[in-house]
Image (cartoon, rainbow, N blue to C red):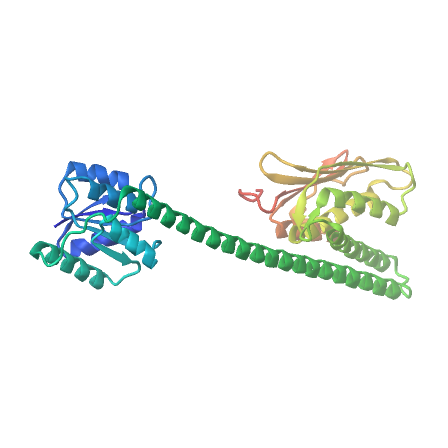
Length: 386
């Protein structure tokens, strides 16, 4: 038996084709009623199985065309639908001349046995082939009624979906606000805890007389303060998980100038930074790196009353990396520096932090010094700096 399958869904046609092929039938497929009519014009078919809701020409229109044309009117026509499933939909389908009406989902064996029984009854004469029941005006009225009803049903479902989606979006927004509030609270508590640690260091320093120990504690306080400033920035930021590191560097530099009590006009500060959002896992190591490099320049680059300039640079590179540079025109480092084997605590810490962010550290000696850190901006694609 040669069967024409009409359905706009590829998977539906595929499943029906496999089912019918399993019983030894040949199938031809069409994605809408217009394409089905063209196939009917081109060849002979023993049965048409059609969906109803389709583009270009729906199943109702196809059935009406088949029953109105002498060449096709004797071909058995069966509806198999998942959208037009009400009793009135079936009644209208039968009025158009359909021989059977099935609703999806349906057991394949039930469907095929029903089709087989229909064809046998039509062949033996036990069942008469259906003709269109009703005049043109009545058919058109009923068709418009079923179409409008289906559109109204879809509108209701669409409104329900929109309402549910709006509720879900409201719930997501509420959850996001709650998450942001929680993150801000965490940043607030971390900042406060760091301030407590800093205060404890101040108390412990009162009884210490050794200058080297006091200097080490002062440096620890600076590192703690630089981390606390990151959390403070995040508290004030529109985004609770990203800090504008260019803006942060400005605040850090001002704080360090005040901390080391640099006389106004003796050391000039030049900022060459651009906005760059960093997540906390990158911002904290970068903050500590900048703190170490700036502290080193302020403590050692300009001994006595020597004057000079410190330039802080932060910019994106064409490679997708970021460059953080802190350079000065001070006395510089004595001799060649092997960064990887540097004995100083500051460089050891910086090396460790640079490795943590997957970056590369260079110390350029010459007229003054230049600490350069190149690192991959989180969220960008590419290899880590080599």
